[in-house]
Amino acid sequence: MDLAKLSRISMKHLITLHVMLDTLSVTASAERLCLSPSSVSKTLSQLRDSLNDELFYRNGNSLVATPLAKRLGPSVQQMINDMNQIMSQDAFTPINYEGRFTLAMRESTFELLAAKLSAHILSLAPHIHLDIYSKDNIGFDGLINGSLDFVLLPHDLSQPNPSQDDLVWETLFSDEMICLMNASHPLAKQSHISFDDYLSYSHIGITDTDLSTPYFDILLAQQSKKRAVPISVPDFGSAALMCHHSELLFTCSRRWASIASQAKGLTVKPLPIEYGKVAYSLVWHKQSMKDPALRWLYEQILLCSR
Image (cartoon, rainbow, N blue to C red; front, side):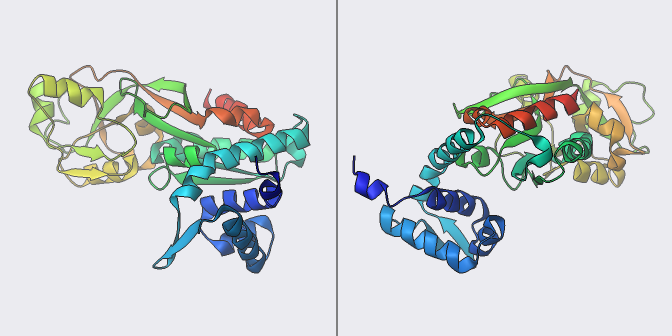
């Protein structure tokens, strides 16, 4: 062990690297750390010299983390969490907490939880900063590299979870899938639609690069059948808006359809085939629960989801 080399790396360097991995911006990192950009650049330069790696390089107008910087992300986050636990001695007082929480959600989860959760958390911890991202922009990789605390998303419970061993999944509440269509759709006046009716019209799909093919579509393939999906969009709201202006069908969460403004005026039909179990789940890195602040946030998310 080279203690002399290790002594040149401090928590200041690790925290700067952690924030830079999140923001990929010297200016944004400086703002978050309440430092000047030149101070952040100086700290990065010292860390580059110690690690003999560029850590971040410019690609056009953007900064990109090097493979080493990405690989160090989870370990650096763990060291920061451990130090935070030592400093706080496992104590956490929400009313005085001035830290930052980061979450990512699918658009449908915004509709169901974001407003309620934000109001609840701010009522208990008025000085915190809550960053809520779209899961389309940052997903499970954010949990792995430490730039995200939690991900909330709807998913098919039959879908195999991504293979990251360090991620923990917990179901917040279950749901069922229904079919949405324009009120003037040829199928809208039928009390129930048949399986053949369901497959005879084109569908709107939802893109998610983190999750595997839903069990429902695998089941159809096993029967040598499939849905025609000429359009895929990243969120439920966009799909519902397309339903208003077309004969496309959209299969989505019943809970979301019951409250979302974009779904108002659309006709709801039960699916003509068993879709499988669906749920909204919370995902986090297993090391997160060592942080008293994140354990508190986890408890608030569970409370609001119930």
